[in-house]
Length: 532
Image 1 (cartoon, rainbow, N blue to C red):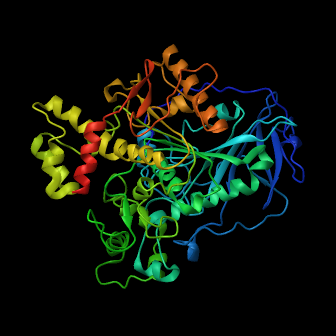
Image 2: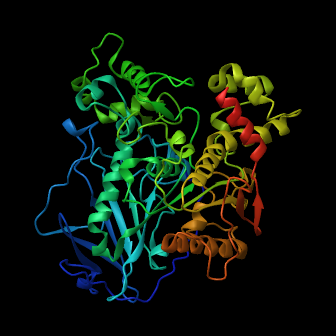
Image 3: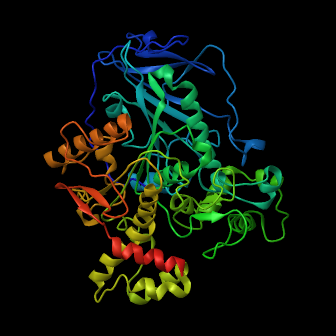
């Protein structure tokens, strides 16, 4: 979830248009009309030429899968129909149905929503004769219930200006994207994970078409923040993503004790995905209704969103990675532990104060409240977890509440990914973002605070030269990693490789410096408690 505004610093490179044999491409740029035409496997697209000198062009609202409506709701994404003529790609497509919570927090106007929302966008600035460029695919956050590809701050121009083809994608959200239910499983043998399958379909589209935009289909980096980081976590662990992704960056991946569930049966921590789906369907259809696939698909999408949203900040339905499926055969965390994830280079990291944004949604005024909150997740182990976060005053409790959310929602799962990289041949790199947001210092280095630096889209009156330098450094690390699988080079501060023994990381803040074993003791204890 992104909550701060951004300041733009778009960097462009001088380049002309790219020509790919067999396709209409950006070489067909019409400078006077500010447009460019490219051909893909389903037809031709007319994008917007943003800068004639550099060739920077954006193609918006490209459909990568058939509209998941009617009988296609709660089914794997299907092929887009071809079109005749040239399709206009100058406007962003509709976004997936959601409550207006995130738009209210960010101060944006919620764009048009529709179940017909499987669109992606491409920013590119390539020169004729250039070698194919690295591709970066951005996956937005929002608890798998909120967000969209073209939120404020997700402008891909700075990446395109550094010779990257930047793709951003929509994917189905909330119960429309992640519902598992016995009636749906009866149809297809399994259910759930539809939003993740949308992401797979977008990556397949990239594999087929990105060369037309100057991109290299054999060098694709996925990156995402929060639920986008959850998506990176899941895709990297999924056998269905093998060969489609070649590097991965997980920013603050949201991996908790409740958002990875078995399709059927219990895992010792919580109910199955199908059990959650039946409970949700009961609230939608009523206690006595027959829960058939037909009855579920007859529900109006607006009603689904409105009535589900009455249940809480994430819409009253916590989406999850459903395992025991083709997308995720076993728990994604267990796949990292066993070294079964895709063997590709990884950057993964967290921010110092991930919890401050969420504390209002989890009101705690004293130790008794804190313990009750822990019991909801940890049951009989709650008191042992509480001992890891001691406090004697209200102010200390706030600090420990922030630490608890940071550790249990974000850092623990991030470490599990990184530790699993010891089991494969590819390198891993950990970061720790500590720059206090100057626009909202009370929240510290909060969840999503790094995004304006990564995209070079900081916006606000209180950012200064330190922020500009950090933003330039971070996008260069991300781009270098996309090119080579290693963020090092170009005279930047050395970023040590992570291993399970030293657990080295790079701190990105007022200073850029290295450290080791970030919160190792407390997170090792959390893992031990979970295994009891």
